[in-house]
Length: 100
Picture 1 (cartoon, rainbow, N blue to C red):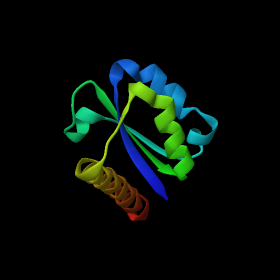
Picture 2: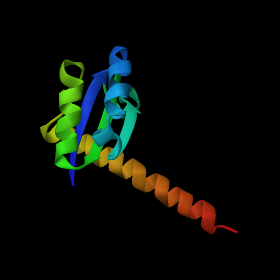
Picture 3: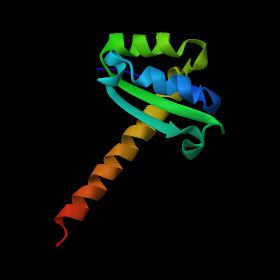
Picture 4: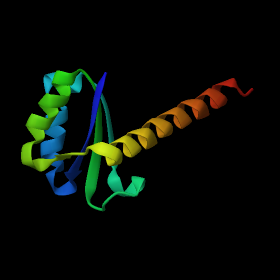
């Protein structure tokens, strides 16, 4: 499964929302987070797209100059943080439903 993380300025949120509704992109796993909540730059939104490689390429094309695809160690570290957040949330819900 391919993945990519994009940084999009908040003032381009309308363009981002439109890109995420694209037929191909919308069928992939998407996570949208305020960058500041992940120690990133203020007034920026991070988008993690996981799925088909052609969907990642499609989102990059749709965002064009509006968004920047993160790469290298920065992208890897952010990806791990987002996955850890997801796993922590899943574990928490498991505890919620097993306590009785």
